[in-house]
Length: 222
Image (cartoon, rainbow, N blue to C red; front, side, top):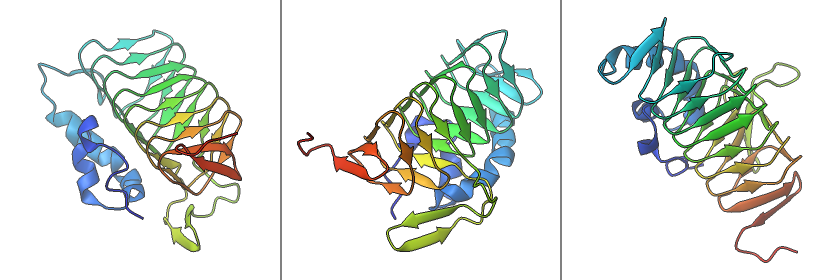
């Protein structure tokens, strides 16, 4: 499983954390410490600490009804909408929209992402230029609270994490009210239909019509 090309690492202020591991899920427990170190090193002429360990870039808009709990970095030109709930350990990239009643915790959101309506993202990495339709959820905890497993064909990888959502590659479009199961990895340029359950490893340039129907974009779909 090669994750080197799943996300453009130039599209996040958090590039350096990805150099510490080839298995990106191993980054999840490291986000907090890395974020605080990064935040304290930011250019104070460009980034403003508006609260305890909450840093924002230029032209960031934050609705007065939203909640932001540090540590957190929100990069340039990003909009935090009404009733958004940004919990601890979140890095949000440039030119992004975190909208109405969206909740994020312990995650890295790359530049140019849209999570605009009633989304939940937990313990995950979302790559450049991704869109989550209204109500799309990235789940981070199994019902039995056992370690999250990644299923790669006949191979099973134990992440050793009780909480781990997904790794979402660049240019992913997730349809409304879809649920991304814990331990899912989605490769770039993939589209997911609304009301779809997604689990396992999804190849790049795919269309996920349902949990059991996944086709390549270059095929003629009836």
